[in-house]
Image (cartoon, rainbow, N blue to C red):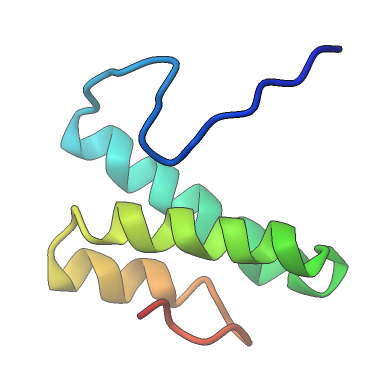
Length: 78
């Protein structure tokens, strides 16, 4: 397996997601965190939280609140 070093300004692919897809991804990330936070290595959890924050930022407040209900013991992304 090869590894690529990518800086924060580079991307391999660019694509568009529908609002429904963004919602599903955020739900999935929150569910993963809620179910397996204690099993995740710290850096992996931090990446999950960063991704969740990014996707939550694309949703409305009602959707954000509903999704964050899946994350039980983890602080809300800021």
